[in-house]
Length: 441
Image (cartoon, rainbow, N blue to C red; front, side, top):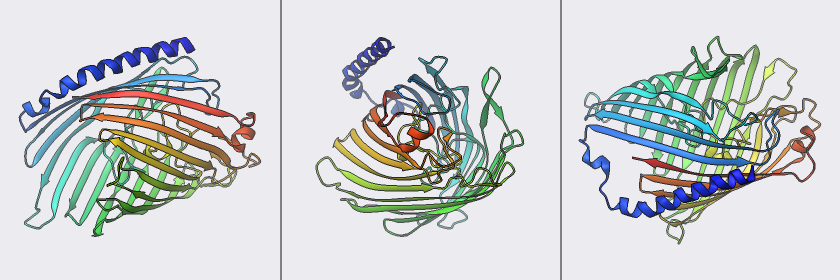
């Protein structure tokens, strides 16, 4: 196995050397998109990533794992000043897997239409200063800070929705109502991604900029799963976010987001909440442009698995990579039953290069609930709450908009909960390594 991994890494290193050799020459060429008429957009993307993990924690898994997820996208758009048509095809696959590998709907999705919508916009609606836009069809959007609705970046497959997104507002405020049907899939026999319909997501976001550098946001969302879902969710999610950005030359910045949920999950009454706090400082004028942040997240868990209530926070269709480390075959942290402080340090030694160090510690919010991303738990609560701590070291290189290299290493140190709930020896550690590239034309 080790020899096989090393062989793959050697092939990947030769590919990276080839990229480094041809990139300067290609950079001398004109942008291919500049040769297209303004009303036409054509883009293609190819991404491949190798990842390996020597110790796994998902329920029922043992030993190590590796995977080579790869994804292709083709995007074609037509537009003028008022109308837009946009389409995107996506195919997500995985190689280097075996019978014991983690392969699910986050890793593999057959070729399908990822986006296909028409849009209309007006800069001034009925002569007022407010602009207006609408999109109808299949979309893959980001909302807010991507904690509830997100277009996935690290994950190999991507969220998509059928429906309508509207927007009306000025430079000071914006309202975005949505009526969407999430594209949900499940494993059925030999079909890994059979789609089931009936889920509905409605609501909207309101964004307001009261003063310079301060942004306020409020939202409410209603999710209703279809009857085909194993545990139908009927959730109302409401909350807000305050973001104070740093001055142009650097300084203090902060973010707060609070979200509350009510409704039902299956036959259980549901009540849950989530809080995010962050404060940081950037030195934009300094060499390497460093940025430091302190982070804290708390998301409720289910206090008593034997009562008729559900208390585990549901992040809906949000992304987690940007706050909790890699997902893929890793994905140890999630936005449910979590009590987690952390720190992040970012430097940019050169304009296209970014180096990131992320450190997080994790406790369960409720000791009797599961470690949600992995399904491991102790209903008695005797295993305690301390899951462990993670340190990630990541480097990214971007060459204009054409190419991106992303690589890193994650060390996870097991806590007392993992040792007791999973019967692991004291002092256990897990090592995760990933390296990948993405081409865009």
